[in-house]
Image (tube, rainbow, N blue to C red; front, side, top):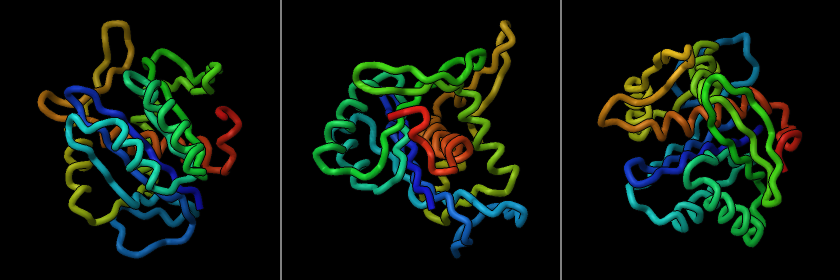
Length: 207
């Protein structure tokens, strides 16, 4: 089993959110969603968390590190850099067993690349790859959701999410006015990581 935690860090107008998912081959009970018997491994969302606007990042770091995971895939954009520094420091102090995997979301015209810095490595990933990984997981019948109240908020954000093509022929993703996409991005980070590194070898691109 691989336990993945996707973390989208909110700012002044957007809340922070986390989704915890297990990549397992055995079918647990109590989950909903399409089934595809041809796939041995599926992605089961175990927890959905959304912090209120204005929550102190120190509190978010403490909460996140209380959730066990093998890979903590965190959005590295915006406030991501200092928060990742906090996560790395606190993870070391707490002997956190998971690997912290920062991901910088870039435009759809880019390509996935690894960037090495003195403070650690991160990977640049087109946002289109992260978002479409959720769609592909659902279409393949490998994404399973828990029947919990928080799931309704996730489903609403997925419904409100939009894609458009810019004049320069790039894909642009975002939520409709008045809604948020934090849970969508958090789930997308889980799905993307599971698809790329489901063989339990995430260290190939990031230390």
